[in-house]
Amino acid sequence: MEFVSSPLPSDYIRHDPRIFFSYHPENTSFQKGFLGVSTSTVSGTLHIRSPYAVEVKNIALTFIGREVVEWGDLKKIKAEKIIFSQSDYLWEAASALGRELITDLDLPFSFDVPEDVVESFTSQFGKVQYTLKAIVNHKAKKKIAVEVKVPLCRWSIPEEQKLRPLIIRSNARHRKMSLSWQAILPRTFFDINSEVVIKLRLVSHNPYLRIRKISAYLKTYVNYTVKNHGVLHEKRHSKYQIYGKDIQMTPVGLDTEFESNVVVKISNSVPPTCKTKYTAVKNQIHIKVSLEKSRHPVMIIRDITVGRNFMSYGDLVEQII
Image (cartoon, rainbow, N blue to C red; front, side, top):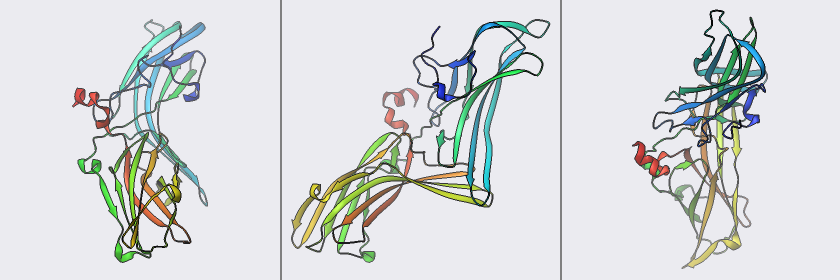
């Protein structure tokens, strides 16, 4: 019997050829429902396929969430927190001996996901990870264990303000050059696995000033803290670039106006904006305007929220809300 809806071999932390997991053929993971908005569950089936009979007492399954951080400073820093742990016996021997011979079993399971947990993510020095761990207890003090990763996604309904366009303007009092600018963000809540178009308008009061290049990218800051120890890791994601020759330039009286759109991509690998016991994740939009014959670029930086906007899911919103 073949189960096409099953985890990849690389998803198994501990494996045994006789034991494996699957989930519903119409699903892409164990998770059902929209965590953060409605009830969410982790469900599937544990399969036993043994070429010979094994004497078994019981089969237990644990759904567990962990946060782990680790980095090397002057000394190694490591911490772990169990976010939650739920266990259930999927099968128990019914005989008076307390054990039975088994070869093939298909054992369905379902766990409720706690409402307040964060999404799974992995960063440079830490991770939030959820797993299913099956233990087959057979002979005295002997066990067979299999453990598989269970990625969880979390959705939210952003505040209306975070979905409105935001206009950022240069501050004339702190301007070091004869250039003013305006950036229009379509919103400040960005979906994971999306891209955002930002409109730029720059006005030069120097007739000789030219733009050499504009770069735009998302930057993630992850701050790890364990007691009195801390470390900050920065990661710049994929960069979008547009060069001077492709930037629209229009004379306006004695000034020169430059207009361009830049694209910022939010890939699946970007950790969501969140805070846990040991980790704080911040995401920022960075736009760098490089000028010809100048060592001083214009930097436009704005904090944004990265997550999963439930309102983007159309018909499903109407079914649940």
